[in-house]
Length: 306
Image (cartoon, rainbow, N blue to C red):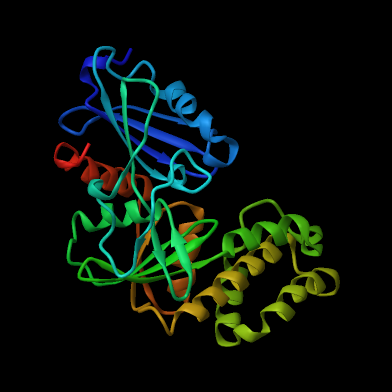
């Protein structure tokens, strides 16, 4: 059983669909790591505190306050308490930028880190900025390109540790919609995609991204009359969408050496796509980077305004 006495603070990554917490001791060791499906999208404003307590009630001090540092969608307009965005160009947010939540439970001292906004072209991020902070912990003056794959993939340009610009692509959500709700769903498998078909589609569409809409229907047609297998169809659909995304970012972001903040199957797909186009890609574990970013924010907790 976890001892409350050993828990110094709690880190929380609160996304749209999930909540993940880590309870840490003074040395930064993880004492407990827990998850729930109570993401921002499932909660009303008055339900956030209860959702957090479901995971941490036995971890927080009974006779004092426990700091809780939160990143992600809990700080959105629809979240627990809105944490106003920082504006590019900017360094990633610190604990000084956090919004203090008026929790009803006196054992909780909750600080929500803000996201980052870009005025032109209009764009926003929440949660990814903490991953960037974690990445910069080891390379504070980094200049280059980060890719943060997901449902809404972010491309970020950094100059000496400052976020100068970024762009979000709804490629993951588009893939989900097309594969589950469009006519293409009839010819796709639910298994892992075909790697060769993925790479071929990536290279094809990277050269002619203007043909994307036609190539998408071509996936359906090839399944009907050209013996394109369901596994290959899934691979081709993914390759077309990611390849078109890469064609869109190549003129605005340096793709010569991309650091991918992610190591799941989506991150691996981006690494594969970049690789087959001749670009170098280095993947890092997103969960480790997120926790490192939250820990860096907590390191200044005692100096932050209360």
